[in-house]
Length: 413
Image (spheres, rainbow, N blue to C red):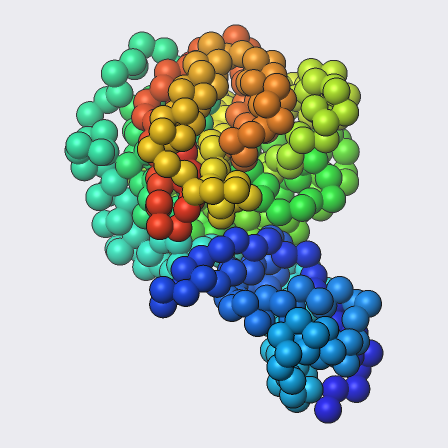
């Protein structure tokens, strides 16, 4: 028998959902966009109906009654109580137990001397030797670039656009990106601009923590961060959003791999939040005082610190299909249209046209859901007169899952 008020009037935390097919039946996958509830849940039609009523306003009796009116079936209250208890245990319900759990996570993360390799063992191999073998395999032609120098090696590399899709899908494109680093004069510091996939209390988040990887720790450039933060503002050191985010972690893994036999290097991890509010208000990124202040802070710090600095944007491109909110899944013709629009976007990146990149997204209200354009924009703004070279463009599509993601590798000179 449930006695706690938040369980008697359950309220689902903000979640994202998309249709999936399991055992030839339609289900809905529900997951936590903050990755605080670590495991997704899969709901059939009955469970989806019940969970959709968990808004904090319905009691369990109310939900039971609404289910009877909708289906004509009596749902035992005990079954509903068990469902609520399971959702609470998995941290999908708001309330005291979740708040305690969340606060413990924050305190543990902030007390840790470094950021753990959060996705080792799930998104990529967790052991040193297995990961080396995995990453090396992505260089193999024809999808991979081989191990020779890239076609255009006439200028020093100043920046890079790399995917942040999981390695199993985008590994060869990572290899194209990081081959450019392997065959360029090594930087002392890599400023990694990562896409933030979860709500963040501020537009940017800088972390002082080193990033652990199975190949060794990618150490943060404390001197760079120490000079940068006074120019940006101390609130940008609120870095809990780094805990579960993969877009910087994946770059740290590849940097440790590609530079394993080279000189020591440092990273500066910076997460970049959405720019949607800017164009929704009819403004441009170039007019946004916060973005201009952060761009100036990064550029001034890059000029001030000793040694070479290279920027890396961890950025995917389009996300289309029912999994991402479209009314239907991708088709061959729709993916051809997406590629045309992606290549137009990438041509702007090659031209170093940061404002053109922003306009291309704003003009169609980010119809393709290009999640990586904010870090790409920031990289172009922070590199003086950047010129780019597209190294590879790819699409991952699962027509059965009704979803597609596109991504690319671009060298910036």
